[in-house]
Length: 314
Image 1: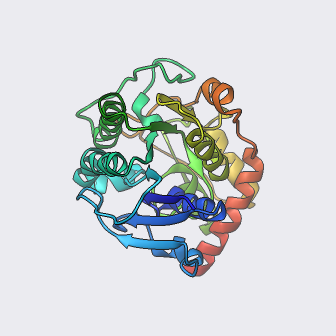
Image 2 (image 1 turned 120 degrees about the vertical axis):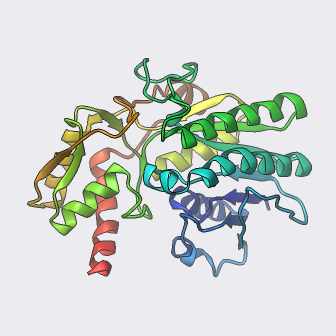
């Protein structure tokens, strides 16, 4: 039986990974300090005797007895609302947390996977974004705490691979959505769905011409599992290249939900990327992977989840 450690495992993506690796027969050790994650994401897993939860800030070293086969480092505030609220913990978990998890992987001779982000590309000058693009990031802007933490984490991961021979992998995650997102996490999809379901105006920043590409969490998890089975060490984009403007996306949510909400325009935040679209050629070639869940289907599934959340609020 494989023994897998998942940091940030009580978060949106982390909890789906816990679920998948348990389903694949692993013993799963979930590590989370619950700064943005929640135990309710794990409730359905707690009765599984192959699952354990450790409440711990991975910015501090973690000692584990016994062997570890895989370390997945997903701990970090990941939405602008969260990392602007917790700027220093975000920098710490990207730097110290990455150092600690890489140290664990080295000590246990475990495979290691870093959750990086499309935000390493910043406000990109190349479109779509390929893994060999170095990015266009403002290191001292408000978003720099997240962007630069992830860029540093990638550098640290490659250093451990090159210098210590740790078997590392890096994924760059593009906008991902699905059940267990927090309604208040500040990202565009939960914002729009929450507003539509409550009958509030949908807030579009700028003129709405900026683009995003939305991938379903189930597709992301499948890509992660496939990458772990390879010996490829450089970054791999995982996302859905089906690009949409934010204004059109708002209209899609209104149509799907049947909401009568209006669209309200607000000023564009600092350093907000104008475009975001992954080039997934590497994932296609290396992993035989591409997104399977169309946005219309994925949004329908996610809307059902948010309908229950909003109903519980009421």
